[in-house]
Length: 109
Image 1: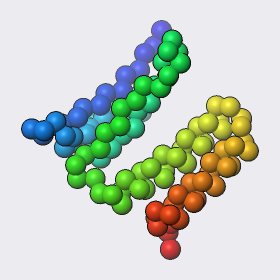
Image 2: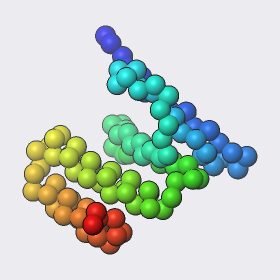
Image 3: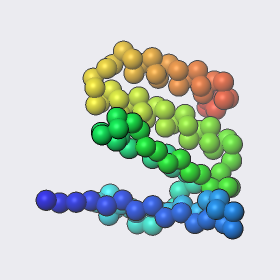
């Protein structure tokens, strides 16, 4: 059986705040690439609960965080639709994403 590994390395300052995030995924041909944030969610089937880690570097701007969340929400709609076939609710989520982008003033001009 084949396995695949994804590695995430987080550099911390003296207050344990993330200063640097790097990740590698050999199967995806990603080697020690820099990132400014990540949202990791995993489903615990025994507890029927989501386990998560959300980290971002101290240098990530609020504007970047707004865009990151907008794009993450859109991606979640795509993933949910692919996994469940629930087209209508995913369209509702995409509509909300448009509303989010308008409220955050991050729509392209």
